[in-house]
Image (cartoon, rainbow, N blue to C red; front, side, top):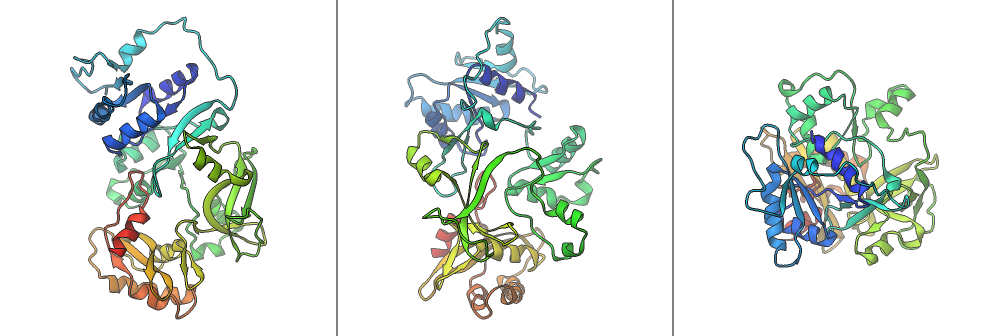
Length: 408
C-alpha cells in the first residue's frame, strides 16, 4: 500500500494544484507525451518505476527549457538507495517533507469547480485524452497496491478490511481464476466494482427478489448523484421510445462527470453536444424503465442492415460455449455481401488445447437460439479464430487491433 499517496494528494490541493495519476504500464515515450501535454511540474514516483520516469524525462530534455522536479518514494526495505546522487533535480520524498515549513499558508480551492485531478483515457480509439475532474467529484478512500498479484490482493482485503474491489478486466480475471491453494479465506464479503453490466445467470431468476437485487444491482447510493439519465438518438439527441427494441445512446447530466478534456476543445464540444454527456454506449430502454446495455457505439456490427451486438456474442462465448474460453473479443469483419460479419478472437485457459471448430460448434447452438436462425449461423461458424489478442495497458481489449489483424 502506498501510504504516501494520501498525503501528496492533499498537498496538491493545499497548493491550488491538481494531480495526475499515470499508468505505470505505459512506455517512456507515452509517459513523456502525457507529461508534456499536462505541463507537469513535479513527478512523484516509486523507486521501482524510477527508470521509467528517468527515461521519460530524458525524452523531454530537448523539448522543455525547465524540467519537472522528480520526487522518489523509497521502499522501507531498501538499503543505501540514494536517488538524488548527482542529480540536483531529484529529491527523496521523506527528506523533502522534513525540509518544509510548518507555518506554510494553505491555499484552498476558490470554487468547487476548480480542477482536482486529470485522468487520461486509455486511448482505445485514438490518442489519450485528459479528463479534468473538479472538487465536486471528491469522495472515497483507496487502498493502493504496488503490484497486482493474487497473494497481495487477498492479503490486503483481509488486512485493511476492504469492502469494494475495482480493477482492470485483466486483474478481475486473475482474481477469479486464482487456484484455491493460493486463495486466502476472507473474513467478510467483498463487492466487485466493474464498468459493465452484470453477467446474468438463468438460475438466478428463481431466487427471491432481494437476493436477485443483491446479485444484479449496480445502484444503492442514497444521495442524489445524477441529475438525469436518458436514452437518446446519438445524432439528433431526441429521446427514443422505451420499447426494449429501439437502440439509442445513454446520456446523462451529473456532478461527478469530468469538467472538460484538457487542451481539447473539439473533443469536449463533441462529447457534451446538446448539453448532455455522450457515454458512447448503445442501449435499449424497457417499458419498466430499466436500461440494457447492448454495445459500444464504435463496436456495433451492422450486418445486412441489422445491428448485431458484439457484447451479446461475447457473452455467449463466455457463458454458454466451451469451458476452455478465458477471454473473448468480437469485432466487425468486412464482408462483400453483408457489409460486416462478426469475428471472434478467443484466448484459451491454461492447460486447454482445443481447435476453433470445437468452440465454434458449441457457439453455433446458442447463436441459433439467441439470434435469427440461419443468419448468424454461417457467419460466425467460419469466422471464429484462436488468437492472442492485444490488451491495452489498462487491461482493455484493443478491438481496433483485432480488426486490423483480421483484415490482414
